[in-house]
Length: 127
Image (spheres, rainbow, N blue to C red):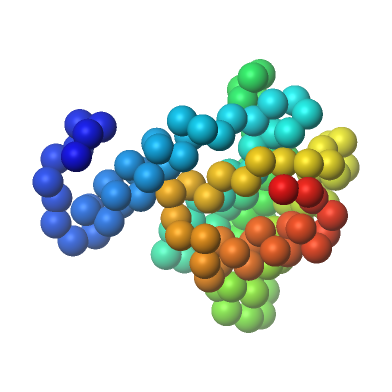
């Protein structure tokens, strides 16, 4: 496929496929001052959400499972993703952001990604 990726095997292939999808998504999605980009980065253990103004290149708000308020919380990874979604929405609203463009980062919109997005919507962010 394009994007200069080599043929890989196993987990390296999966990460390369996610990277290709993220590049395709970023061709269409960009954050502005009025509607910054809510980008989600997922690993096997943690999830990170950032609200980014792409025009200035600044991060306006962020939350992660590594934050002290969430780290060590009870529940599975989906429950922790919900907490991250609510926290990033709260911090974004405190920064004056009402609406965002959702960037799933090349991951499927299911499981932890969907849980984070739903929790951010319930906390008041508009997508």
